[in-house]
Length: 324
Image (cartoon, rainbow, N blue to C red; front, side, top):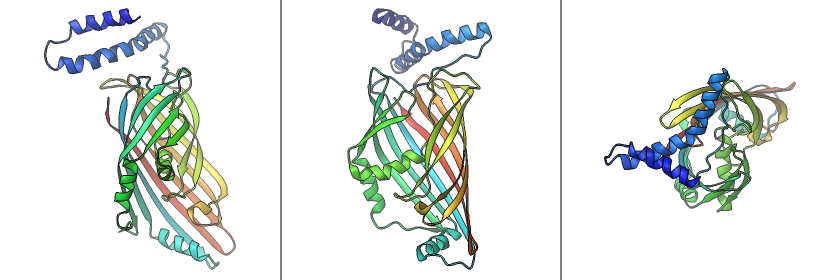
């Protein structure tokens, strides 16, 4: 097999332009062609039989591949309460702040490097963070961070790393952090990231699969989460700069009566939420190259004395900055 692959590379290199840039671009072009050949053969067979071609979507197996991302998470919340009932001092303070409207933006940049692929397909990635930004507004006025907190957070992230094991479809199996102090903080980004998992079997345009995802209910490190049942649908195959891009639409909803002490109200709330979004997956390179989602939330708590309404909207955006 090695000899056959080598002969293909030599043949393709013969046709590459004999110039300086060919040494840079020809290897990437050849690699893309070799990776795409099985998909092209299957596509030809499917077209001949009149069937939609199916694709096996999985994360890269190329040890050493690096992907650099930017993740931005925006959260807006507003609360209203009516009635003459007594509220605890903590709840009253929380409601007063939210009645003016709260907006929080968190942005982080990080690298993922594949370091190992086991026989059963489990991937091991090293993850490192190298930038962090936070901005908060209440009633249009900036929420001041304690002096030095942003710098300390960036230093903590830059000095930390995580080793993440996933299935070929991207489901996390195990995470080990180099610094325990960073674990709680980083999990917010994991929950606020793109809620997309790849299917376990080959799929064609129009096929769907399901998963569950967690979303933070607040901006603090101690914020609770809610679990959404999501449906992913392979809606389109686009041509990207390095090969085919799978467009995956995401949709899900949530409705449950629960106590939301985690967000500071301390009273049972009936919460409804709906999520929509799109994720983009590069077949050739075996990685996500972008995506965004929107999450709308409404919560109501009513008694004889007081009624509390919470509305919220969240946006998440993932961008591939560079890859190798």
